[in-house]
Image (cartoon, rainbow over all chains, first blue to last red; front, side):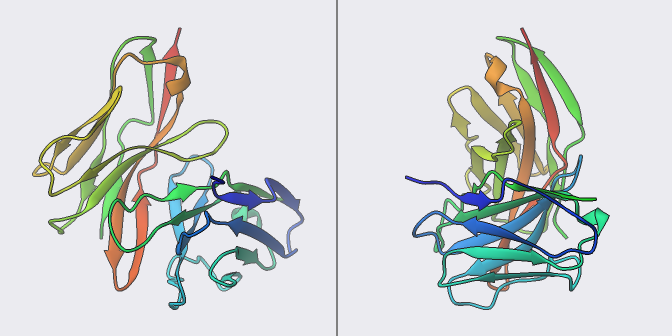
Length: 115
Length: 116
């Protein structure tokens, strides 16, 4: 079946512009995650969605970052007034919930470059 | 707070040889899950192997196996008969589940080069 898809694959934007990154999870996966991977770093958790529950936004680095998930499926990560330090690869993952094995399936990521 | 440490930023191995990637973690929990993910240049994170802490037997997936030392909080990955396609970044990860949320905490990764 189809895996997690993300769009765009690459995005170049000017400092101060807003950007939207999209994630389509695997069909039937109720849990969705966003991570950020900065150059030479591991992955940093941003936000977690589970069904209709309130999302865990504890990883969002500033109030310029927000995310929503519509209809329990597609998610959009929005970065307002982008800064150069926002340049990174943004990875989305989804998983089944309710028990082991807790594997997260990742998309190919969006590489964001802020000039 | 749970942390994951990968002390080897880069490793190299000859094709067909064996290599071990190190990972240590810090936790006060008794039951948890650990993972190794592979990230090739395509950026796609691929699960290599998982380990449930309550299982004493080390997980094995074909040429990949782990050495899980719970008391030492160590979770190393052994790749046998290395192949050119094994070249990638490898990330160790710990699953945190609390307060209705869950996430993976990752180490900074080890870049593996496979020499022909």
